Length: 153
View 1 (cartoon, rainbow, N blue to C red):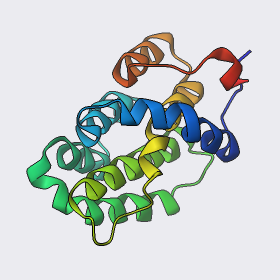
View 2: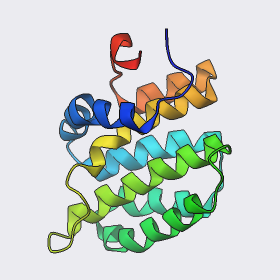
View 3: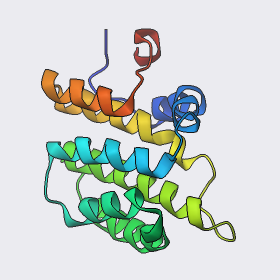
View 4: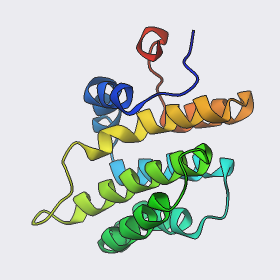
């Protein structure tokens, strides 16, 4: 049985193993993150901060803008009530996508090296919140892998 919503401890556990494996298997992690975010944002489309991160992460030439994009998404998330869980979850995903993009081009002051490992787990968490079969299928396809049911319990 799947939980209603994955908590932060569960996200961290998923990220440390499964999320790391998924992220490190990508040829271009930030571009993959942008693809996942582009599909996931259908749950709450047209958030300018999310759309900016998609464009920034997608193109290496734009990734130098990722830190400012992260900050904008973080400020918005911190002013978003957690009970607005779809928007809150989407902004969490956008933040780690921005971190992945920044870390790709900035080695002198990167975010935590393991931050991108949360991309796939945050995408899973969004499917738990949205709980619409078509959305879940699209996000699963974008992620490219899915944790075992035991990992979700």
